[in-house]
Length: 497
Image 1 (tube, rainbow, N blue to C red):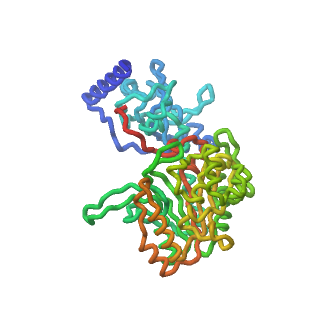
Image 2 (image 1 turned 30 degrees about the horizontal axis):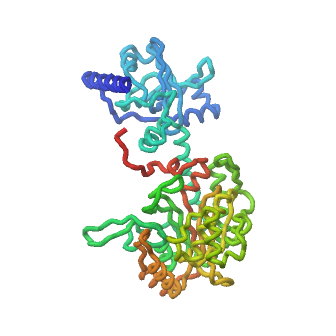
Image 3 (image 1 turned 30 degrees about the vertical axis):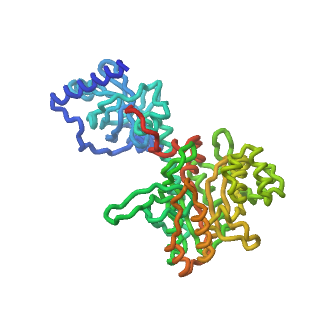
């Protein structure tokens, strides 16, 4: 720590000395003609004007490495497109300029104008005719051999993480590509991208605890949305037959490697479609996105090969419980027996606290514990109980289950979709049951009367789906934690780093 303080002290003394000399530490008039990628692309394309040094280029970036050799120096500088070597020689830039160059540090931003040549080792290098300091770094970067490895510091100071770890930059570049590919996929199928409120008077669209706030001018409480679902379906009722939103949602619940209080979802709705058609659409979309982001429909995730190509497995919830969870079929209608089975298998249920839990909720708890972790390859699970699917259409063949699916990959739920309930009477009754059964863990459940009114005006047969963007990014970038794919994840307060 004392050594670090000494480095910072010396750097700040240097800054004050430069100021005293009248050096502008933060100019804003340097113009770039080529990025690092532009230069390398021209070289790879065999552009002789570049490789023969006939074209003068101007490039800029952060100094990441610096090696001085008397009257010359090699640096490595990085811009948004990559990293490149540059060569600074006193006899080329001038004695005064080189004396100034010796005052620069790793972490400073530099602009370089010159020509390209190949060193004796064959590395293409930018030979400086002149250079400019573009921004002075007050603090030193982490020591290069140890880098920035501490996860807490990486998440809290993401800017340092991005500077020091190129693979992290790649994760977020691919995240952006993934979202763009999803948007293009849906737009090509005549979906309309929309925006719905992030502050809502009623917390609805999912069973989760919301964040609550207050609007002073309107003198009313509002909730950060836990899902955009009910607003998007209002739009379907209003005549927008295919809509989607890539949205930020908020849930005031636990934090884990899979959960962040603020997260990104894709929700889309299609009139005159069923949940089966959305399963087909989801397969197509994921295959296209995987290939665009990784170059293949087969990806490696935490040591497991995930194959998005081919036909995905489809099973009912009950089939999965029997074949994977080892549940005897007769227990699916025997609540007491199912409770005994759940307790014996270590499912997180309590005979006393969960005495009133419905058999549908108990079934899904058993599924979550015993089956979900085993679903490594893309698998659609269908036929969820009505009790745990308050917005889903009942199955025509079995009124106790719904036309709903969940998609699981690598033991994680990635998507949830269903044929929408568009019967206002049935929907109001289900909302009423939710309100009656609300508990202290989620006492904000309310009846959304305006949504019921929208259904009363009529909503066409519709299917809708939500996809967890963060979890999908985790899969396609081989990231173990959701914090690795969110630029600024929420963390507990900490002492100043």
